[in-house]
Image (cartoon, rainbow, N blue to C red):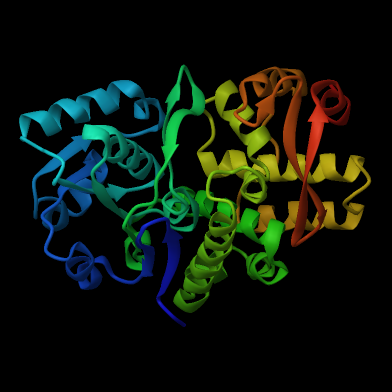
Length: 342
């Protein structure tokens, strides 16, 4: 299996996604550049030999720090360090760190170079791949951001061994989503269940590579999300509403619940069979992810009105025709309300 995937970038060398141990491939990917590292307190504790190799800026943990306040703090740190347009940022962490690092790098002095070491399964299969960088505003997900591909992303499967089990399960949700919209083969891997997947390095790497290949192909076809890329939002319309309504769930857990909701809505639209809805719910449960959030549909529906996929009185909803195939449907909010039984 080839250990890297490339995503084309206009006028620049391709962004390279490498599945390998970070210590092996980082020197060649840096290519002589001396980065300033952005990481979080947990990664600083777990990998002191990596984070202390260069100057670094440490931020806190959790979705609540993914804000413009944190971005401003990093700007000030960079200015204090004398960072200029030749400086280079290396984000080491999960999706929150990579989102913030990409946003800072894209806006500091109108843009400097950057790369990532993705340390969580969620970041490896989704968050750090595809060039979306952004932060939350007043609890609304990624309301401020930009599109900009990193020079490289290192996905180190060894680093996943330091993650809490809940975080690994959470990351599987985005890979399940990728299978649901584009690949029956990828989706079927998860039928083995959580324990079988994490105990099989080869299977885990196949899942990481398969998820990245799907996202890379979609991003290549539609970098700025004018059409095809919207399909990657399957399950996220409801997931973001869940995250706005409660702090109870990790992002991947909210996505898992959102996928079940989206499958049920697809079924009510006459697109997805009862059997496939049951199969989706069963597979998600087999990897230990939630399928219900306990939040009433009216609350979720009200939170949807600030979704980025909204335009006027409509929203772009990703519906499943069958496992491995989806379509984008423009729904009026009153139509969606009926489908959600609001």
